[in-house]
Image (cartoon, rainbow, N blue to C red; front, side, top):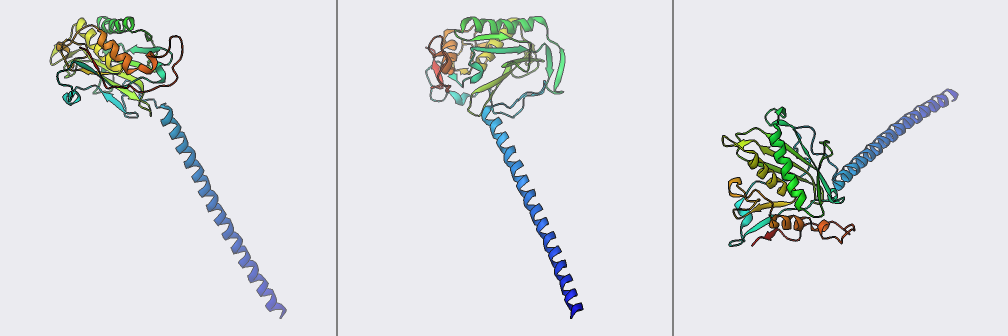
Length: 279
């Protein structure tokens, strides 16, 4: 009887050890699952914070026009003007957000050509071309009341980045405005062609192109009539910033420009209209 009792006690101990082992494995799986869940929740929370704050950086070097954020391509589309027959107007696209809150937008002009095929920099840009773009910013800056456009040597810190590309292009200029989660502009990238369709642009033409693209940067679409800076085709446009373009910029960014003098606006908002009548 004693021998039989000893064997039974040993079997019980073995069973207990197996149960303890299984319990440990079960707890390990639970801990692993909880840990994975916590990490996933933290990662999703961080991603949500980045998206809501609009803090994605869409540019990483010369090849950095990316799709991290939605952007507005200023390509002309006749369908934009449907319903406006017989009226001369400029379309209003969008507004700058918190970058405008200090009353200043900074711009950077790259002094080397971009090679879009190789995604890097090429030859130096001639001084006359850079001066043409500088003059374009100077005219906008001198005519806008309540907003300063300032050049900066810091490319990554600039609100607006300007690049030149070689001729033989179909578009004189392209502006990509990038938005935050709420639809406010956070960055602008402008590419200006040195020529198009086999013809090189003069300094005055480059200045006009730059003024036109700055209009897009500031929230304007195209004009539907000739003789205006925002006309879709360079040869049908104007080389100067008129009162209608200024009114359109004020309308696009009304939350900032309509604030009481010397005070901060109460809140940011999108434009209340999608166009401005010029005549």
